[in-house]
Image (cartoon, rainbow, N blue to C red; front, side, top):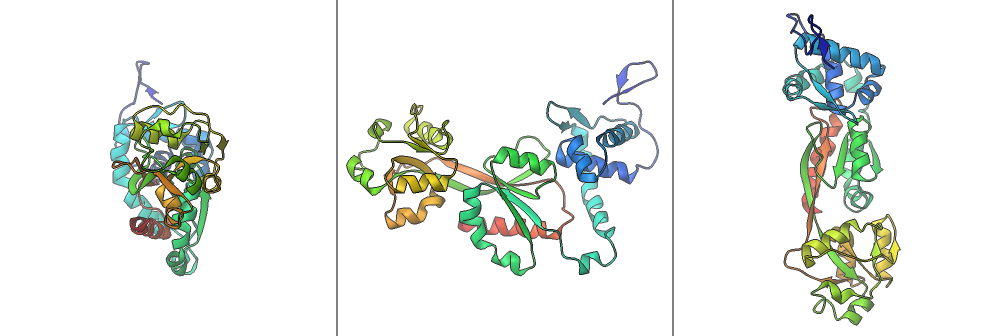
Length: 316
């Protein structure tokens, strides 16, 4: 995205001593937030070539390169971070003022689009939505895996995403939400046969016990094995199901053993439906993050949902 100078060499060009066009800055902010010319075009209702042309025009005016093209989307150059920090608040405030007359007072705010892991949403988020609904907040909730949800967030399809890892790069902002502890569990029948938890101090104690997992690559189980037993888990699951609630149900029914987030099986552990097979002093912990695009959203209810989630997560 460099322009050719008079000598034919490529470079960012010379800064133009003239006021910057607000439309160019809005387009820049959309690309910065979404991480993609295509996604920004969709968000702004423009064609992708128009967005590309506007960004090149802005770069000529600034005399700076703003984005580096990647295989998937673009990455902000260091100056883009500085520019975004300066303009995000004024542009978002201007967008609020520019709404149709009476819109802010009379029209309901747009729904807040929240996404995250299905189990965390159903177990922790959904039961606590009453205070938000009482304030007139409308929610559109989407379950899914973190990576595609973050892509949708960059493209403007979500306002907030609960992610199972901190996103890379500077396009998205993330704050820690909560820590989830992983526990090794089975039904009371299997626990009794194994003499657990006292006898399950090494991975070999579970030899011959069927393994129930979320997926064939055993993402949660492999992490538990490395952290607690200090070795690689080399097992084939007897049953897989891409739904941790279904995995929990199968294990509670006596199918075998698995590793689950403690929040998901806390009630079953209290009631005895599930039993801890091992209780290490240092269990594996995973931090989830609340992620959004930088700046203030034009929808005031996004901040309400964000603050509610940060407060509620203390009790999860």
